[in-house]
Image 1: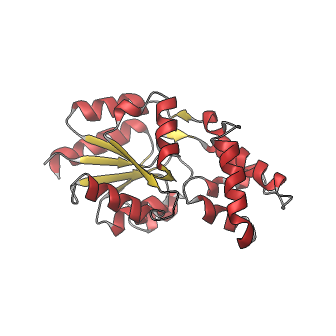
Image 2: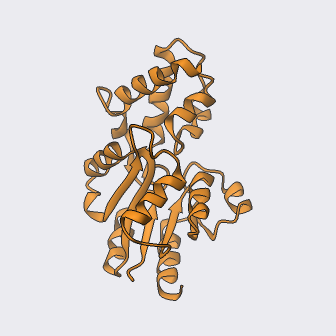
Length: 219
């Protein structure tokens, strides 16, 4: 069976922190809520959006308001998502992995339509066999659920590998009995990923590509 690599999007494929954090600050400003410094907002990159606003102490009854304002700034009128950029070497790595017979997917906590729009905006859509993300109705929200949905829909069983930059990606992989390769160039806590049992931690795209090809050959 063909093996597959599942990639997180933000902090793994794309350096998207600037747009995400700017839109988070704008949302808090518009809601007249206490601001959090830009440099302290890395926790916004990766987890479900509602959970991020809870960490900002947004009152529960205003969470949906915050989500609406943020989404308008990020993917609507504000186009905050365009502040992202693919990490150097990512495109070439994906092309090479696919030339070696590997299937590639995106598994992100972003909404699926938004994730697809972002990939298309940066000319990356053709480098993936599928995109899996959160649903607007909340039926799919957590990383374990999204990864599992991908595995079931694509009939991958456990013949896959998860790549991400946060412990949430790691926990999603472990919940689905997948090996996990953590990348150190994103926004997650490398020490925490190590403590929770990442299969490997890679400091460069070249190292990641080498590790994936080794897994494909030997596992």
